[in-house]
Length: 260
Image 1 (cartoon, rainbow, N blue to C red):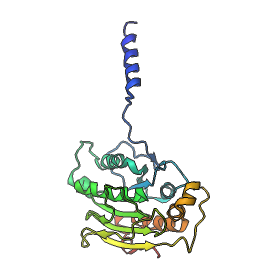
Image 2 (image 1 turned 90 degrees about the vertical axis):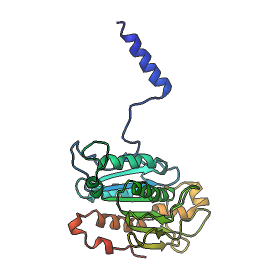
Image 3 (image 1 turned 45 degrees about the vertical axis):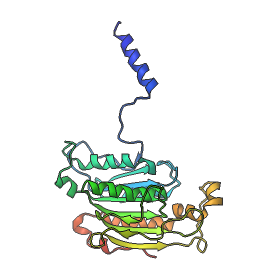
Image 4 (image 1 turned 30 degrees about the horizontal axis):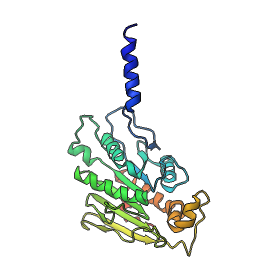
């Protein structure tokens, strides 16, 4: 029985220090994790919620979009939603998915197989652009970034899309104390196509958001509506689904644009 005392001491120490076993992520996984094989996912789709919203909150556009994509996406598509402050966890999840030989280093072949789509709303939209920039440093390409009423934190730049992104699109509204970036540009127009900067005026065409908080209704009504606008998120869903098609059947994807 002498061995029990040290074990109890270890358990107490872990409890006091808050140490835990490492986990993949606290973000919800909206698609089944691939089996433990060396096969890379056919696509990787990462979304970010805005503000201080939980990745599990089904009242918000990014979470709803991820769930719908899961139902119709090709087999093996990896889909996750993160809080915008969990960008490092999203980055780590992508690296793990691409590292098919599990050697901790991405080869040029593993990087070349990447088919990544990033999207988000508000702070989450800015997080998507920053994550694309971080992937660029590793030479990892991104198929598409989608920004919805993008709001950058003080140290962030969500206006310039890095040249590892093939296509980017920006949706915004201009009203209120919180409103999205009106224009994004490409760091290298020869490598990145800006599909558009699309304006929606919710003062002219309001959307009902019954699940939103009273604070959002009072102080940020237009910004709030970008998070629950079914027409907007349906357009984004169509864009994402087109680019999730196998490479040999996605010839029309690059020319597909949302309707203004």
